[in-house]
Every structure is written in structure tokens, then in C-alpha cells.
Length: 365
Ligand SMILES: O=C(O)CCC(=O)C(=O)O
Ligand SMILES: [Fe+2]
Image 1 (cartoon, helix red, strand yellow):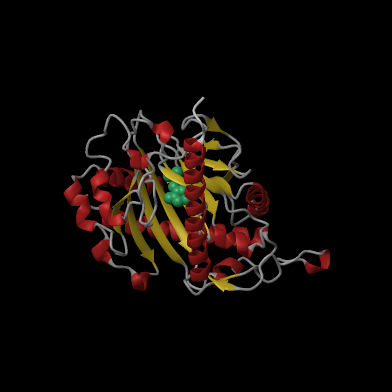
Image 2 (tube, rainbow, N blue to C red; image 1 turned 90 degrees about the horizontal axis):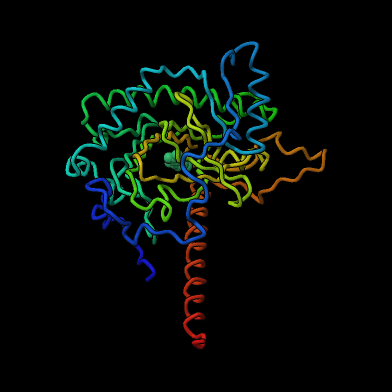
């Protein structure tokens, strides 16, 4: 039976950590073509690992070259020697895990459903999906500072709030450094991308993927590209982040590296670069052996930020064309992306129903 669409308000019924069920509820079962093809722990070394050591001095040229190559080929890479203190990363990871271990009623004090800006939710804050992701999340809208609403920041576990504050500030610093490198990799001034963002927005999303009884049938987070400018992802040592550079024909599992950040370019950056830099298609798979934690820090432009290739990126003299018809705002870009996703899901569902009807009409052999 085709699963019926789940509205966000139904979701706590599917709270996945309460007690891991023996089999998967149908609402988590993905169509066959969407299911994982590669194991969560079959790690690949294909994604470049770039050291940021010496980035303000003699090593800058090397970093720019490596970032440029990684962004053209994958749109995803890892960074080490990034300067974010290890103790901060360790505290953030430990307190995040402690939060998800709290009783459901404690987490639901920060229930994010109904359009609240931040807090706890099961599966996803997007509405109208017919299959659920196998995860719980806690979201912090951390920047701009004047929009920060601490009433949506959990007070438990003790000290988490203060650590998230420090973490989001440190990651804002790292993101700006990375965007300077990406600008220079496009042959532009180092502030070209941050200027295009108008005012940098940041959202910290802590993903918790519980152990799953039938991990081959579902996904922790379905295939997507991140919409914003750049994402910095911290993952534990379990493994589960997968990326593809050939539209889903082949997937690789990103090797977890202690203390590294996975850097993902989002759609905004893809457009700013006139398509020279990719926004990586990625997903998260789950497993039956252990739960997994990842912390995604999304750096987005302001809502009115312009989405259009940056001045100087399109080399017209070399016959290059601008691949967008007209500039749009980030809000327009995001709305179009969402409607496209919904339309694709609708078409897929219709094709499936038609297929089922056709096979029902076939004469019995
Ligand atoms: O958990 C992961 O590895 C991926 C998370 C992610 O892609 C996201 O939150 O957008
Ligand atoms: Fe993502």
C-alpha cells in the first residue's frame, strides 16, 4: 500500500528512539530506487581532505588550488587543521548526544512543529513528504544575532546553550574563511561571496540517527543538495554520509576523520559560480549496529540576497555564457527548489500508481 502523506503534526507518533522497533514502520520504507546502494561503513577516500594549516601565509595558494579542484569535481571536501578548538567540538558532540538521550517529553518542550523558529522535531521540518527520514533533529537559528530567539534553545543538558553559542561563533569564523578561499578560487576578491550574501545567516542542525532495524529499506536523510552557500558538517566515527557526482549512478561513503569538517557547497554557491562549482548531491544512510550523530552548520545568504553569477565569473571573452536568465532572490530560489521537489515527488508517485494499475490489468498466466 502506498504510504499516505504524513503531516508534520503527526510526527511524534513516530518518535524513533523511544524503543527501537523490530521492523520498520511502512512510513519509513523508501522506493527501491532511493534505497542505499553502498554500506554505511564502506569508506571511500575519493573526497579530498585539505589541510588549512598556513592558510593566512605561504600555504594559501596551495589551499586555493585544492579547494578549486574539489569544488569543480565534487562540491564536497573535508578540512583539517581548521583552528576550531578540539575541546569545543568534543563538548558540542557530547552535549548533543545527551540531549537526544533525554525523555521525549523533555525534547518536546522545544517542539518545532507549527512553524516555530528552532527546536526539536522528528524526521524533517518540511511538510507533505510521503516517506519519513529515520532521524531526530534539533535546530538552532543562530545568526543573524538580532533574530536569535533563545526561548527556542533547549536549557537541558546543562551548559549546552553556552556551548552552542561558542560553537556557532567559531563556525561562522571558519565559514567566512572558507568563503574567502572559494571567492579567490573563482579568481575574485576574497570578500566577493560574503558581500553577495548581504548578511550571513546561520542555522545549526544537530542530526541524531537512531539504530535502525532494517537500514537497507530506508534513509536517515534522503538525497538532496543543500540550498544555501556553504555547509560545514561534523560527523562522528560511525559513517553514513554518502555523496554522488554522477547523478546517483555511483555513491561513495565519506570516510569519517576525527575532528575534520566536511565542507559542502550549496545551490547558492553553485549559481554564484555560474555552475563552475558543484553543489554536491548527498544523503545519510543508517545502520543496525549503532546510532549516529552529525552536526550540520548551514551558512545561507539573507533572504533578499541575490542569486546570480558573480561579476567577473562569466568569461564572455572566452565564449562562456551566463547560465541564469535573470537574477532572483534567495527566497525565490528556495521556493522554486521546494516546488520542483514536490512536483518531482508527485510525478514519481503517479508513475508508480500507473505501473501498479498496469500490472493489475495483465491477464493471469
Ligand atoms: O548526517 C549527515 O551526514 C548529512 C546531513 C545533511 O546532509 C544535512 O543535514 O543537510
Ligand atoms: Fe545536507
